View (cartoon, rainbow over the protein chains, first blue to last red):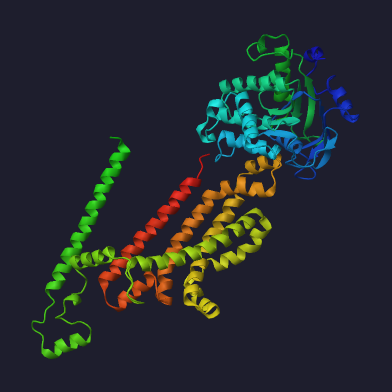
Length: 291
Length: 288
């Protein structure tokens, strides 16, 4: 599917990979279905419109695009924290209307409660998910997920005593601890330095592969998307054209052709890596219409 | 020795020096004024007139501003026996302070019970915030003592009126601060509790309350400061008991040493109250 992309002209043209996705959303298939979503703060000029895609169970999908194209709005709509102007989101056969424990969210700014320790932060989520659990049961569950992100030694520390990377690990552990049906990650590594980011990407990938988690993630980092995602949604900004205003939307869906057992260390040695990377970077530079 | 400790030590030494300097000035100032106080060169009529005016030149206690020695013996007298009770106009300093503190505690406690829940609701609802705002803005700047006549007329009990005045002056800073603290709880924490489907009661007590606690405590600390300022004035008006009444009573007795002692005690107790709230504030403050 991917091999023909390299010869594709830079002019926007529906990719071969794009068409089946659109079709899949038309017939009711897929674990998560987003159908003709749009959001307008100014009625005549929606930020994005006609956004449709689906996620299969166990799939890892990244969305990439410039600031202001509406990525975070889409994620917030999926989380139930925001509402779309039109369009529907259906997860597991039920329409998404408001936040739910079925969808774990990792926020860009970790969003830990600073007055609680790591243990208490995660226990807060666990008790919300299973209010009837006994203290010992909650403790065991919390400890398991803290161990999963390698933070057992820091379990009784406050977030202010942790580094940025450790805080984000706690955020990830909290999202996983409620064992949601899918995970939504809003640029979780955006504020981290490159080294820490790499380590946590590896950890995240390991946990996601182990738990068969369905993930939807926003990123600005092309390499991060290639490493983690099975499919990458490329999003364009809304812009003024001679023919009038054109809202932003999903310009292209790229299926990652690299083997799923890839690692960060060997990623750039894989065949097709550079072609894929160049394609996405070209999209961002020439076609996404940054403001 | 580390620099911070060194600085504290030097500051402490300087404080002691300033204190000694102030005592020295007091000593010199009162010593010279006392010398000019004698009956020498006065006619019998002049002495008689002076006595009638309450300025008996022969009496030892009428030496103008009290000397350091007189002050010292007064302080010692009060502190060595703080709990005596010789009837309505002669009670130990600890009993007077206890009456004042009791009134402040009651008025302040009632204000907490009203202002914190109300502030919570106002902070959570933009509609109520706007609706209540004009009332708060008008009521807040009213001097608490201006309520006294109304309180005395409606309540018909001077002691409860004093408590009411403390209540009314404590309520506003707490209300405004609680509402502000609750309204400015970070969006992301509310989003977290939303995605975790936390019920409203749990959200209020486990997310909003701890998040707003430092701001609420700031309001309580300001309120306590104001309450302690107001109780002195209120007790001067309603009389009977308390440190404010003590000050007024000793002024009528023309016992300046007692007035000065009471003023110092008001300052010390006010400082201790503030210290307690500073500690509470420290306990609920979090580092982000």
